[in-house]
Image (cartoon, rainbow, N blue to C red; front, side):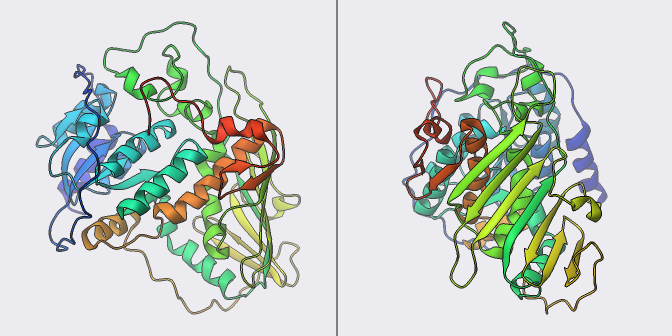
Length: 437
């Protein structure tokens, strides 16, 4: 990495100064009536727009600086201003709709809170742009399905931000499972240690002058501003996020989806409880049981998600606070982001060395690089909205099951809980007046 590029990345992650707000744009995105773009030479740079420039947005931005950054958007000028100074040629604004009106834009990187993913992503897809979007792709199952449909109809190049999918360890774990080394897999346990924190629901409160709060709220119900539902901690409120499951589920359950070729579950049942002080009510600890049908000659799968310290019985022996455990007919495979261990025959906790199957999944050129090169070549990515959308829908279904308190019998084609009509309000929620996909 060149010194200048490293300095820019450090600057993007750390620089924050106070600034004045810009007026919000009011024009809606243009219709997507243009044909799919033609391939570009690899040497030609893309014109990118960045929506959300701090936190995950800052990391995503630093990963695409090989291209032309022509537009920047963030509702918080305190975050936007220092980044805008690092890219003086880029248009900077606090309303994504103004960014989407920039002429010559090729693609957009979306790193907003979950409740704005689909709004920005759908409008970008309708505008004829390719999209990189953070997980879990959207706030509701209906939104995810809409993004999948728009991407397919427009033949857009997409990638969901499950960056660990590009890691070598996941590839080797997938190869072991798919080679049949541990036999057919019928049971998977996925556990993650994160826990939410509590916040307060303010009765009154005004946003600071550097924040375009109306755009930040977007389709979510109006509530007075309070820092306890703003940067990062929005994750712990149903209005804006989906708790730990929505925050981390796509990263870990992704491995099972990839290795086993999973798609939509036929049922989901959840339990959990809140163990913090606060007005929000996402669960501190949670368990979700998903059931998947057989796929060809592969057996049905029962997958269980745990978070907040809950984990499968006996998992303490593995000494992993977060992991994925495949249980096959001939053994087990334990994996996380950077490690994998096999347990063949005696599965009491002692791992064994095994001859790994010949590598069959090529090394990734990088999660963001995959998307950039696919946009140029009009190719595809490993975490496109179709593959990742199925994963995200299942993750979000776990929250639907928890909030209804029922075992959901799921009709994926119709996006319907056949035994629980009250689930519909969580599958597709009502938007605040003035907002739509």
